[in-house]
Image (cartoon, rainbow over all chains, first blue to last red; front, side, top):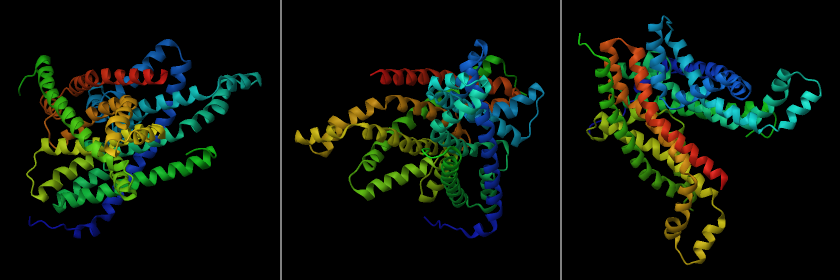
Length: 222
Length: 215
């Protein structure tokens, strides 16, 4: 076929790939923290909040879960400015990723909260803890332990999905790959290398989360 | 500038949605066929065959779908195949779906008690007959909910094929948005169309799950 693979460009591209990977890591780190926090609020609100709040959270979850992330991203990045809210690409990406992830993790955290026996809450209340203390100190840690594996998977999925934010010109890994292949005309080789970088990132991220979870939440977390 | 009325926008989006539906179906069918082969490998008795299938699944579940589509789109022409966005989209989503479906069904096969295999063997069935008559029907039955759930994910994933130039719903909406400068309305409608396609399936999957839980 007269085509031979050429990886000669790689030496000069390591910096760009590393920068892109660093931005991808930043995106997923922010999303993980903000998304988990938001989903704890959401799951708690869906269980104990007033009825309109419960309904609103339910609708939010269904809308986010049944529409593509790419459309949500475009809606936030292109749509919000027409309401007078103008966001940086990277902020829009973080917002879209956080909102998307929260829709999935609200359900996950909720399942965890349901898994904590009711007696735990009653015992804590009987000991004189305030309801907020009961939630933060007694129920939440046990719930997080139960759902940690599912949360880990969702974080990895979100990291892979973040490739899409290159479409609004966030300079992350896929964006750098697009730039590189435009410069080198080695599209297949470029995307192949970057795909392998993603594979390494997702395996590394999973390992990091599992070992970090063991340390923070104690044994029994897989 | 061309004037677009609201109904022009809706009509064009609905016409483009046909391609989204068609692509979803093609990818689901293709993914099921390839996924079945991957499943056979994954549950084979030979250790190396098993490993190959595990590696295949890990590769597709550990890399972004967008990258897989790019590799299809730019890689296949190197093998001398002429490829258009439709072909790249179908093939990319097929391989993507096959990895997920194989893993879902594998969990179903693993969930069956060992006795099912033993009973099949004691009836004198050979391996393929056991699979076809006993194991797979049960494995499919207990994994129906996650399979439908994955179909929803696949429908949403077709949005990414707009990036490699396939004219489906999202790509059409980008073009309309560029002409009308009404992103709020256009992307809102696109989200609505996706929602109408996905929500009934999500509900169906949920119902299947509930029914499975009560058994």
